[in-house]
Image (cartoon, rainbow, N blue to C red; front, side, top):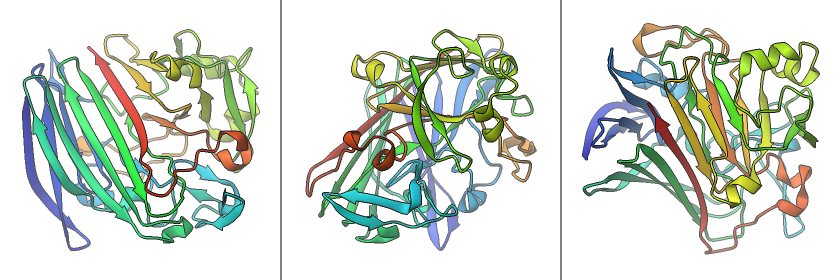
Length: 352
């Protein structure tokens, strides 16, 4: 097991470090302290040596304006909150409205745009891990409590990358932490990320309105959202050319109810490249996974290798609470009490 720590640049007068975790199979994961961002996942490849399978920016400094949240941690909340309103024990809190009338991914100063501290680096014969830490002040973006958040990234010899989130607050508050990595398992970001095969262990998905705000649960039966068997995403979309949910989102930007699979410890999701030679399995304790197929990525970003970004060049997999849980399904709201520890686990097993 190998761990490398290097200072790579300065953003907002703060030193940004890169930590590289490498296991005994030569799988490498790079994390930068800005945003706790996964900047590369390099799979060993017989032809090219290594292939990066996550959407990554060419210049580290560009992550300062990372409006796509590429590889970044999300918090204090992942996803959207209708009208920027949360309720804790009957009291309304109005959080930042950074996307029209709504809150997206925590507001204007989320963990995605903070430079995390390196708290701990450890390794043994089978694991390499780094723990990053950051703080959010009471009332920042409207969320209550002075909060400490840690993210521990562990790479093991079973080719599994696990992120363990923990958080604590000095007031009752709401946490919904996740990571926003985009995957194209071909390693070629000039090719569509929709030309991948997807399986999701979910009987229901979450419909959204024209502002991408969740409105109701719906059966995946007879819809482009049925991935209970491994299916090519592009072909699935083409089968339903008049589906208004797909048209509005230019593909997928929807939550899937995976709570049953998550509770049983089963893979909640599987993703394979077009040739089915590289894949991943996702495990999590989250009840939902949001699939964003990148329909609005656009062409203004310069990716690793000088490649220009394009719509749907990669797919984001966001394991999280039910989005906008305060309005979608109030009975599922989980408040983190003062001085209690919030936990969330997301794990990716790579197959190659």
